[in-house]
Length: 291
Image (spheres, rainbow, N blue to C red):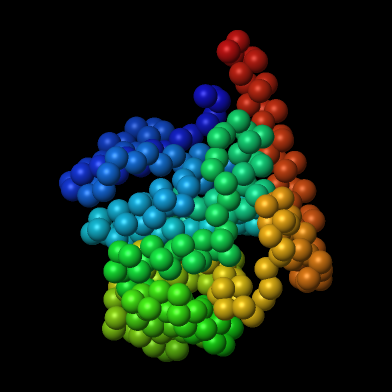
């Protein structure tokens, strides 16, 4: 194990909710079968090394834990933002699960010597997520995106899963403070969903959740960025071969070069350079220590 590596373990096994803390380890017990979820830091951001089934297991644990949980998106863009925004880094560190949301994160993990499952973007996860929610009988509220994107996503989810319990939707174009914001929160609280999915874009969605979660009666809050636009069909996803090759970022760059140039060309390059620097730093530290 690298000298500076920090790993957090979530062990989900029986009904009691217990915790054992050390400098690098957190163990929690839950009503679900034994499951070990690792969080490994990439440029300071803890990312959960979980596949889809493990992610679902973790969400179920949070819903039944008696406390509110957060599931965030771990991709190159979010890691770059967190490195430069202290409150966002703090928010990621206190999140329960940080999903592997991009090929760049998988590559960064590999460079750092970690073993990660494949990426799980919302475009891939959306339909299995809806099936998971349906099978468990969890209630779902979709918040965010442009007009009708969340509503249309809900309708598509229901067409594929008629018994899914979607208890509300709302677009993301509302004032994030003041009366309109309070009205949205009241709308959510009237139905008290098991899961609230928030798609307001980064870092606005994280800021909104961090500021208002204590007032929101939802058991788990999950970020989804622009997922409603893709799930509803408002935006086209890249061809399957580009997705398999980890080139979805290139497709989005070609589609929206003005908006995506800084995020992907500058952002991806900066991310990889810092990952390589961290790897070299770890290698030098291990060499100096004689390990």
